[in-house]
Image 1 (tube, rainbow, N blue to C red):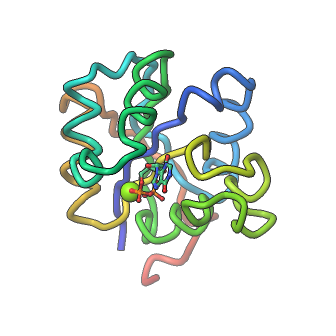
Image 2 (cartoon, protein in one colour):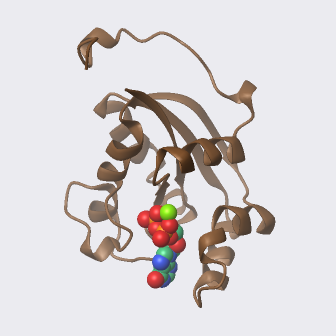
Length: 152
Ligand code: IDP
Ligand code: MG
């Protein structure tokens, strides 16, 4: 059940020097990083990515926050990547996120919750295309027999 999903390390995490720590958690779990880059999010890209939130009262702050400083975007691949990365990330309101999750360990806020992860397989496909061109994604071999059995 190999899947791909999109992660965005948000400006608050970059500013706080958490980029390496956050990426390390996905590597240690056994995910393969197949795309990685730093970029500035434009207002247009923000409106597309957060289309489900543009009418919310907090959208103006969210857009300002996400477009003001660079982010790091990553595509990770592995078993049940969409669901498992959401578990590693934790719930949106980081104040209520359990310890051991990224949001639980590094944030006490909903609006500055350090990371984005796609919320479904369909969203992941769209979001990966939104942030990465095909030639920015890399195929390479890892010896996955150390991660899980071939029938898992
Ligand atoms: P998610 O990031 O856990 O998928 P979404 O509901 O998709 O959560 O919201 C996207 C982002 O918008 C959140 O991560 C957070 O930064 C921001 N956001 C969502 N709800 C609120 C809110 O009630 N107040 C402030 N910011 C919010
Ligand atoms: Mg979301």
